[in-house]
Image (cartoon, rainbow, N blue to C red; front, side, top):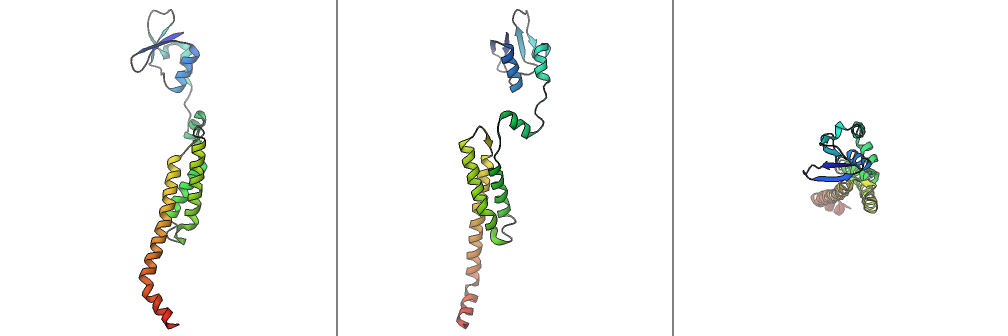
Length: 166
């Protein structure tokens, strides 16, 4: 059993060794956190206690994917796909086909991603990506409609002249 001094300067405990090791793993306790082992006369750093120092030596997850796997969450693939399609529809898509082949699936994937994230927030992250994909895809459609109206307006007199020739 141990007592600890938290980051807020308050004394906590007594806590069992396994609880303290769990706190080390969560990052709530580090090597410089002061602990008082039961029956000990003075406070020591966590790193000075052999059984707790082993928990400090465990390496942190190396990548974001490993970190998310350790936490049990990962980026929703539908949200990521929706964001990518939204970006393509607003950039490359406006150059050809007015982005419709990318914006409609972008809307669909983003909505599915948002739904999955809402239904299972412990397993998925990526709400911002899904929203970005949705906004970009809708913006791409609005820009395509605006460009079509602009083209039709500017070409209306030429179109009417060609119709009158018939």
